[in-house]
Length: 212
Image (cartoon, rainbow, N blue to C red; front, side):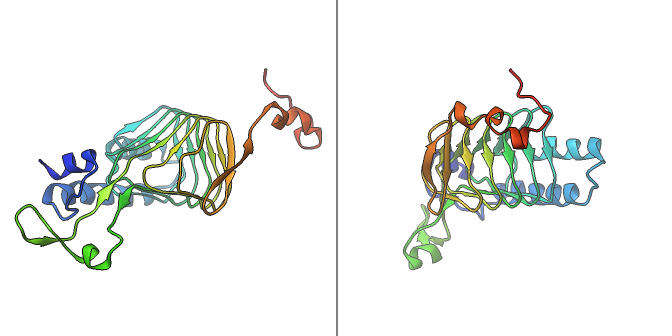
């Protein structure tokens, strides 16, 4: 079994595998290429993103700087807005739905490491030789989610459609759809309802109108 197949199977794999290292090196170089561009160099930026990530929807804006570990393991849906310093350690698959908003410094992490220090230093591989191994859990984010600044999404988490995750949250467990959740560890504060509509905030809505 190839090391990338082991990632997909959720079992221990070697990050030092030459094929995986080549994938990461390609992504890291593309990160740097993207981050060197000005934000109005839109054609060049989109060209790099389409080479960098596994799937890029229409109308995605990523402010940058950005850091993808593999890139090819990440899929981003249509109409997403992603602010400064977006980091995705996508050893396992990361799926982002449509029309999601990410504040500055959001981090999505998929890899896991042994809790026992000696096992982090080395586990015996199939050949009986010591190796540094880890495993990874995929992350899924639904449509129409908003992540505040400095949110960390941990391995194996699913966030349902229409969620708002408060700034500074560390998301360690699944969040059901249409929830406002916050904290460390992140927990559901309440359901998002029609009462949260901007039409009930005229002092903020000003002369704008909520679309029907």
